[in-house]
Image (cartoon, rainbow, N blue to C red):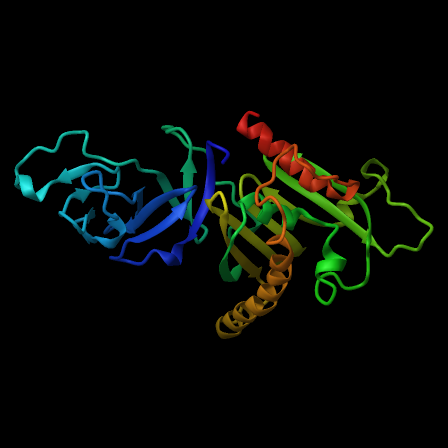
Length: 322
């Protein structure tokens, strides 16, 4: 994983009031809960006493109580009460587990994966989606490393083959470019797929003029993607790393063309039908890829059309210090 980054790891609605939730993210078992003010807490899901799962415990006075012996943990991972030692007993500092800084914003829970800092950077959510939109969402687990799931959404070559009867209709198999631009850790790639007339050859990125007028998509490091369908319609996804072989995908349909409350909910709900169908077209192929994880250098013969994937791998290696 790339350190010192904000990772989307859950949707806000998954954390209920008065009920802890246990999840695996970043290869670690975590427990999250809301305190009385609604603030999210996140600590390791393993009691430092006898190793029991804290997520099966209960919430009492803004602490989570281990179900085995009642040890009470606060949001920093520190044990503040050991019942067997009495209410007035001091708890030594060694009774603690690690904790993560988490924030709730834009309907997601974000985890800071890296060194503690007094001032953390802003969560780099897509500015255009921060207000004015409603959305419908779906989620599912793919048994692949999150790099494979991400690269599928950066792949502009696969559309007419994987999505023949959906978003890849038209037999546009020849790929001009694509043109890839970076702004800090955000990639925008401009797509111009055309029908192969048997005469033309694909244009190189530097040969393409007015590429800004083409269809474009964005990827924000480390795990967020956006399909810019129109000013009023966007598809976005968060690829939450579970462990080295599994990824939770959160896919959202954002729209602002329908504003009537009831119709808005219907549109957003039905968007999940087509989004899931398209996602499963991808899943059928991606789950067959070997290996499950990608790297900058690996046994693949990439082509010009793979430019967004190549750029992603380079940026990921750079941020990891490789």
